[in-house]
Length: 236
Image 1 (tube, rainbow, N blue to C red):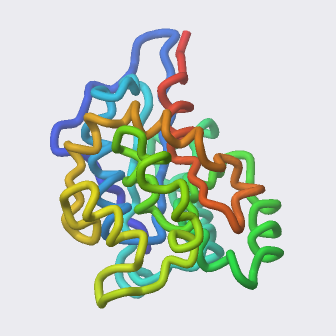
Image 2: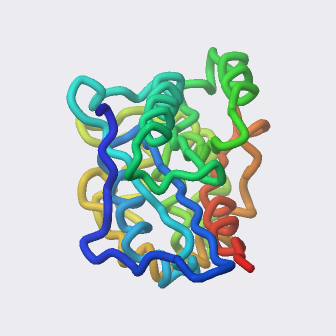
C-alpha cells in the first residue's frame, strides 16, 4: 500500500443517526514535512475552526518507494490507486461522495510548463480537488498574520515568485515566512499558532489569486477556499 491513512489518536463517534451523512476528504501532499504537519493538525483540530464531525479529513502518508513522489501527475496516480483499494476493501467506509484532495506547489510550472498544468487541471475528476499555492505552501502559512498582504507581500511579489533557494533548508519565501511567523516552517511548523489565526488567513487570501486556473505567474493560494468549503458543508 503506497499510502497510509493518518487517523487521530482519539476517534470521534461515528455518524450513524438517521438522516446524517459522512464525507471524507483524503489528502495527498507533495511535501512530507510542512504540508504533512499542517494537515495532521487540521485533522486533529477541525472542530476548533468550525468543521463539523461528519466531515473527515484523512491525510495520506506516502510510504516505501513512493515516499519521494512529488510530481503532481504521480500524486494523482496515487489517488487513483488509493481509490481502487478503498472500493475493494470490505471494511472501508468509502463512499462515492468522498473526495481526494491533491496538494502541491505551482513553482515548478511558472516558467516553462504552463500548458502541462492546464492539461493536468482538465483531467481532474469529479471526486478530486486541487489545493495549490504559488509559489509554495509557505505562502498559505504567511497569510496567518494580520495585514499579511499589505505588510509582507505587496511590493515583494517578484522575489516571492522567483523563490530562489537561499540555504540548504530555505527558499526566499520559506525564509520570509519563518522569520515573520517566529518558527521554522521547514520541519517545525507550529500548527496551534496557525490555528488561532485561520480566519485571518482565509480573509487575507482574498487579496491574492484564489483561482487555480489563473494562478500561474502570480502569487496565489486556494487553501482558504478549501477550508471555507469544509465549513459550509451542511447535512440534513
